[in-house]
Amino acid sequence: MRKLKLIWDFKGPEGIKIAEHHALHLNEFIEEKKYDDVHSGFEALNEFHAIAYIVVPEDEMKVFRDALKPHRGQVYAE
Image (tube, rainbow, N blue to C red; front, side):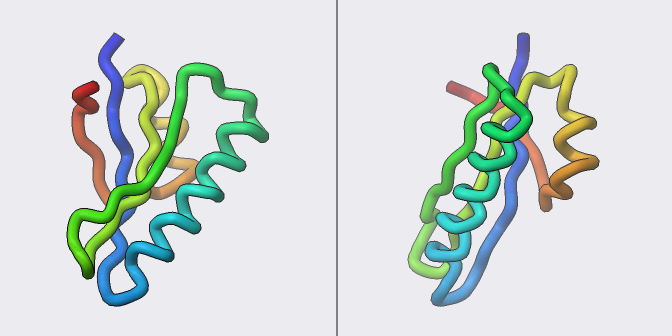
């Protein structure tokens, strides 16, 4: 099954901290809903741009998209 990476972008001098914090909330969402095949995290792309993300099965993407309102998405490559 193909997976998708739903992404939130955070820019500026506080972007990394905000992305890290947002990833904590994504983890809480995953734990609360008891999803097994889902994971989240954050990445600093550079000093002023970071992302938080959640990786979900493609067939469940709409549920996550509608509930969490990501900025964008892409196919997840492990």
